[in-house]
Length: 170
Image 1: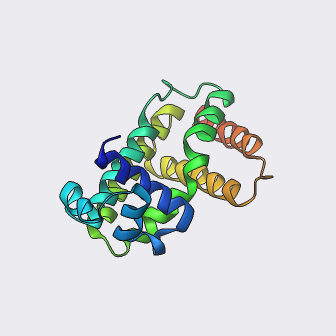
Image 2 (image 1 turned 90 degrees about the vertical axis):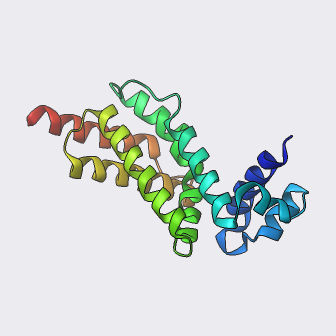
Image 3 (image 1 turned 90 degrees about the horizontal axis):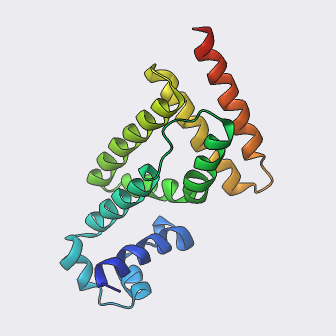
């Protein structure tokens, strides 16, 4: 496996297992079994590593998306496959972004793209409503990462029903 990929995988693993507070270059390099100087060689800085990891993460969220969420089943499948397993990663990226302005900018930009995509898939034109739906989905994902008994599917069905009904009324 290429060193660059090893570092990205180790950075993701470090964030998920140890949290952003423990995500040092040395820790990540050790987890990747490479010299810590290679982080600078491949990414320029710790911030560069996390910006690249964030880009890759959002690319996976935006890949293989359905054309729209016509059914509750499609919405559930997308959220359960793409959002729920990665809820903790979003929190860790946000924590890192307080100290890394480039990461903060990248996080905000990618969140806007994701919000637009979710809104388009649900047929929501209003910006405030798109943001509300995205926030609700993030909240459900986060809640379920803390409480595995949280009925994510039922909550998503209700969320979809509410906004589908709202769009029909307007």
